[in-house]
Image 1 (tube, rainbow, N blue to C red):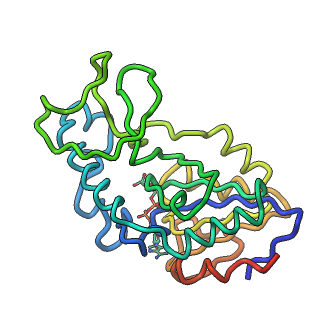
Image 2: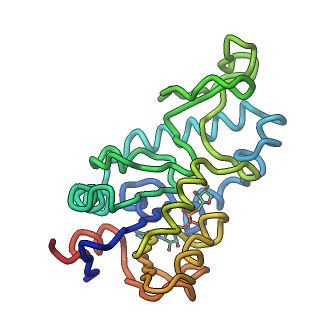
Length: 237
Ligand code: APR
């Protein structure tokens, strides 16, 4: 079990693995999205300039899959941990699905954006909730009143992730860092553990079925699936 004291400040980073048991494919595992798609074609600013229709087909497929998914016991365990720890828990996810929120988590930092939001690719209008799918010819894709194109509010390869200032602030003060279901190959998230590991009196914990690429930076790992391990992992209050 993971013992947490009243002085502990916990930073949790989740990746695609936490949603795998909810039916949302990961990216790099067997059957992962990047086995069927080239991210250069569907998840980069260049892809958007080149073929926005293909990009929207990709995100429309992902919206359909995520819309059918339900939170699993791992999401629920983190929502109850938030109730217990209050603002001594910082939940940062690389995932763009809304399963943490569906499970009841209130403060979820989506560093890679949110699948069910869209925004204009030109003006500064705020992102808006959007569950629609767009599988139409390019000429019929949605546009903003400013004339710009409406794009998914997701961080593409080569773009800067969101909320990085507050994320680094939380990394700088947490006493326990827990990564769940992430392969540790995509920056900047892959380096978060190192930021914590080099500070004294911190614990860095990985939870997942196989060691991530950044395994040496973790002081402890729990091998197994998130839905199996999370519900009974935290010592009772
Ligand atoms: N429970 C826990 N972990 C799991 C489970 C499970 N049921 N199933 C798979 N995993 C683990 C795998 O072992 C793997 O290490 O989840 C990890 C998934 O890794 P990736 O597919 O690389 O996903 P992630 O690390 O979240 O990707 C990071 O890359 O493609 C971009 O922007 C995208 O946010 C994403 C980022």
